[in-house]
Length: 231
Image 1 (tube, rainbow, N blue to C red):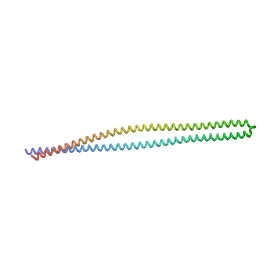
Image 2 (image 1 turned 60 degrees about the vertical axis):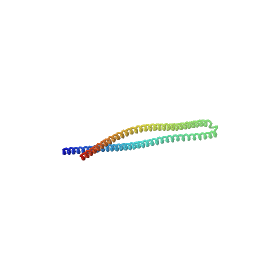
Image 3 (image 1 turned 60 degrees about the horizontal axis):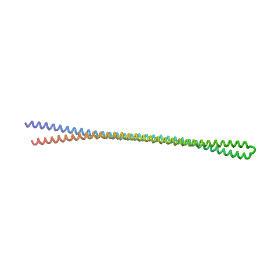
Image 4 (image 1 turned 135 degrees about the horizontal axis):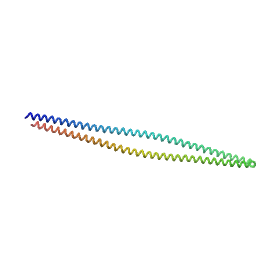
């Protein structure tokens, strides 16, 4: 009879040891799952940081290229405007020169007319008419040059306004796209965080259950050992 009790007690002790080992194994597994979840979260955070860094670098590069193109376009536009102004100024100068020459010829003709009033009256009158025609032509050319200058300035203003409108529209579209991209990123990050938190919570729950099972097994083993000791 005493030998049967001893065998039963040994069997029970072996079963308790097995339960204890199983509980410890489950605890280790739960700890490993928790570590894996934390490792995945760190990797996800690093990927997110790398993606943001890359996105910023690309945006900076695009901005630099756009600024360079704008500077080149502005430079070219200014050169063309300066060239047109220079040409208009040159034409005006030539017209003024012609007018001055015409005025001088007129004075010379009048002087000559006075000296040779009787002899060359008809010729002097004809020359005066010719000189007046030249004067009118010179004034007409001056007006045309002035009009060309005004047209060039008007076209420059219109081009500048179109450029400003296009840049404003481009900026609004870029801001809208950035806002949408930021929202998508925030939603994705929130979802990723929720999944990571859920996995961590499950791992913690499993660990807690494994710890409780181990404590129950240890308590039960102690109670049985105490009971056996009393017997």
